[in-house]
Image (cartoon, rainbow, N blue to C red; front, side, top):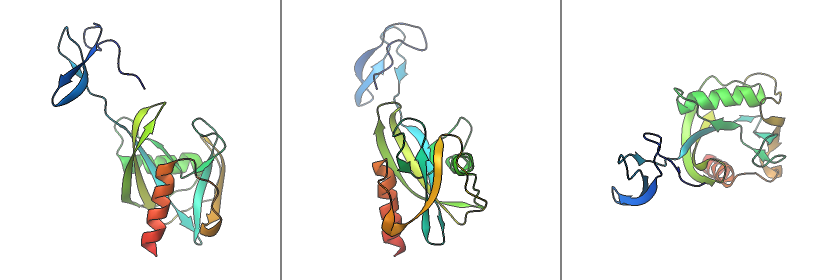
Length: 165
């Protein structure tokens, strides 16, 4: 993803300058530094009867591929709240509580760098039903997982189940 071409403060053309120890997008007219920070996203590892919950993507990126349920954190929302919201929106399922597990920086051509945080669902309640940007919801045995769309999601899955034993 390219940098911000014009200053959001004064409208002047930005340039890349060395500032605060690294190359950054800076407005030479007003001095505003335009920080390019990762976009936060949250996802959930959930199981039922020893099988892993996955969704098939209905929207870009990776349409038709399987991944953990999740999405971007909205304004004013904590990552755990986003994970619970996305779980409900994509799968129709709820969880009483989540516990933070790991995070992974992930370069995305659409959103710049994404900081993906994964949470573990203590239990899942409800009947699975695809919604929002998921075309299917399914529980998979760990020995028969489909190819996973995102490397961070596969790393989370591997790490969680290797740690769990």
